[in-house]
Image (cartoon, rainbow, N blue to C red):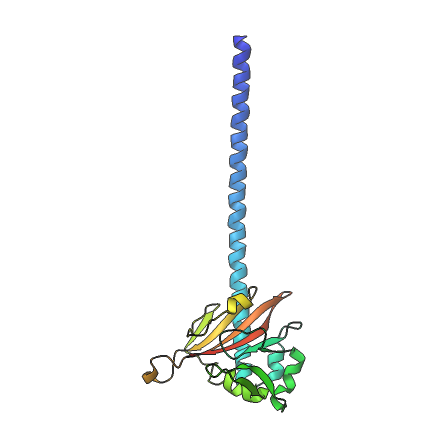
Length: 214
């Protein structure tokens, strides 16, 4: 009986050691897989950041040239592009244009309601061309003081909600820290270009203008 007991005990210990070794090997395999996944994720992020930035730079040049045909090439085919006059994106009132509407907007005399003016609360009733001059490319955003990659740089009293409205999106911000020293930076301006994925491409879904608001 004693001999049998010792044999069984030795066998149990051997099995236990084998299980421990197998678990250790499995843990090592999982660690290696996690490293590979982390590496691929980092590579994916780097590649996509470059794609988004490249698209944003091309778009801001198109805006500078008022080239709506070129702009339309980057717009999401299903969602279109939303124009927001201030940092708080108002999905109920901001105007959304389909990509095939963009080429004719500059020459259109149609009056749209682009939300409301900060402070007065009066409706922003403008043609697209007038809105563009005041709430899209009102300063030379193609040559900004700073460029932010998915980071809000310009902040004022307006409740900024870009991450909430575009949870699956990323954005590039073209920012001017200010223009006149007497205002101590309170005359800053930003333009945020928001992208979402469509298949394997990043498409423009939002153009958010922002500035200091009272």
